[in-house]
Length: 393
Ligand code: B12
Ligand code: SF4
Ligand code: SF4
Image (cartoon, rainbow, N blue to C red; front, side):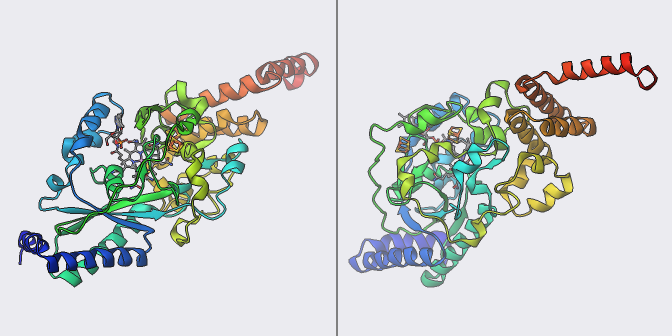
């Protein structure tokens, strides 16, 4: 039987009470299988996202995607899963929590000598983890129903994951544009299985943001330009992960010690007080990434960077952007001779224009913060040597 025959047969069959009962039972089982595979929530939606199309177009027209060309490339296919994968009738959305035990948000944000890495990136790359489990879920459904067309998607696919998950009842899209749930907050990833089975769909949750605007107010770069709308170009996550070139000067101070991603809009959200930590070993923080000083990470060689970021989402930014980001954070760190020396040493070693420009910015920031101008001190010392110790001058 072909893929289309399967869906047609099931679609027709679903109109009879028995077939509908079978599909209801299957939907229930899918949720149980999904949970057994480590997903904390599983929901089902149809593929109709027409009401999102105008907003998606407005977002693109405003250039909020910045350098993320792939956002534009697929046009309205993002809002049309059945164009992306013809024959798709339903989307099974899944949620996987990632908040590690002992997240130490405040401690890492407060100590400006430490590096702050977004909590989703302290463990293993989620793309692989989710895709593998989604494939297992698809295989399981297929083994029950016989022929089935399905395809797992995580992030990389050009579909609007949050509106789909919202339709599937996994939560509501908050003013920071992320999906959140009243019992579990927002520290989770989303993934989808596109399938050609006309399963019963779930009910969307009520939006519970109310009058709250905490996420909009706390954003260090004012990236949430209107409720539900993020200007990607201003977001620290974009600036530290997606942007290839120089980080615009206007955002450098606001980045603080965030060297990879940003969690602020989620940290302030009242619903995250109820968030659970993950039991998933893949998402537990690696010691050499959490609670590390900026100086120790800045000292990594390229081979250490590659070794330590194997299997981690951080690897995709590469060594150059890693140093670029840490240089900014060092410029924002409290003034210290150790920081200045380390920046100067790296400047001597590096022939990379992008890195050097960020190091020079950081050095200028550090110099300004020093209680006594280090250059002037140096000059005074040289003068004294020349005068008093001409032989050693
Ligand atoms: C591109 C992208 C980014 C970009 C752009 C962010 C953005 N808001 O779009 C950048 C790099 C900035 C980013 C950052 C982050 N991301 Co991201 N990102 C994506 C990606 C790949 C695509 C998102 C997308 O389609 N954006 C396009 C715009 C148009 O979509 P949208 O924001 O939903 O747009 C809607 C609104 O603007 C709204 N709208 C527009 N105008 C108006 C007007 C009104 C009146 C209303 C009501 C609505 C409205 O309608 C639009 C269409 O639906 C998704 C994966 C995916 N395929 O969905 C992950 C994804 C959204 N990211 C994720 C995460 C975890 C993050 C970060 C938290 C990572 C971090 N800690 O650093 C931050 C959070 C920043 C934030 N507040 O959004 C998760 C979110 C999980 C969740 N709980 O929701 C996702 C789903 C990845 C995943 N598979 O888990 N991300
Ligand atoms: S992730 Fe940070 S920079 Fe981006 S919207 Fe949220 S608070 Fe703003
Ligand atoms: S901080 Fe407030 S406005 Fe923002 S997502 Fe959470 S509840 Fe909604």
